[in-house]
Every structure is written in C-alpha cells, then in structure tokens.
Length: 106
Image 1 (cartoon, one colour):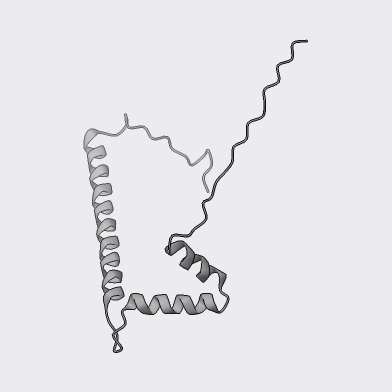
Image 2 (cartoon, helix red, strand yellow):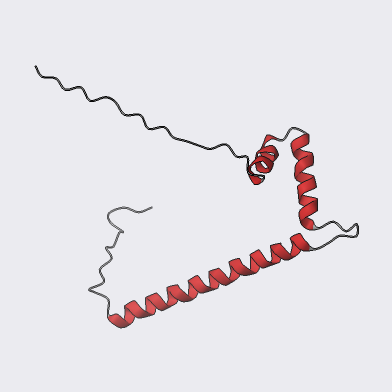
C-alpha cells in the first residue's frame, strides 16, 4: 500500500538521457508485444466464429442460437445483450437541471 514513506517523486532531472531513453524503449517494446497478443487473440476468435460445424452452422450462428435460448428461458442479461446488439439499446441521458438564480436586492 502506498504511503508517504515509500512514494518517490518522478524526477527526470536525476535520470540521464540514456536512462530515460532505455526506459522508454522498454515500455515501447512491452506495448508492442501486448498489441501483438491482442491482435492474435482477435484473429483467433474471428476465425473460430467463421468456422463451420458438421451441420454447416458457423460459430457465430451457434452463439446466437444459444444466446436466444437463454433469453427465451428468462435470462435478462442475455436479453439485454441481444437488445443492445440489434441496436435497440435505450439512450442513457443524464439531465442537468439548473437552479434559477435569485437576486436579492435587499
């Protein structure tokens, strides 16, 4: 847990240009690796959704049917997912009401 005794201020004036560059380089490499992993996961899921089973149904078809069955059985979360996916999600508005300004000339 952070407290005042173990916090260190970020003081770039104490770090040399080389240290700063090395730290930035490591961060860039880690970020690139994370992006590659996310891309691979996305591509794998897209491939699985497009694959057909023995009946000729795609993974996406099977998921839709399973989701519909759950919603039809009374699963409200499944219903909300279907509703939102087909574009009928209710608009969430936060109304901002302003109080009238009362000027007192007393």
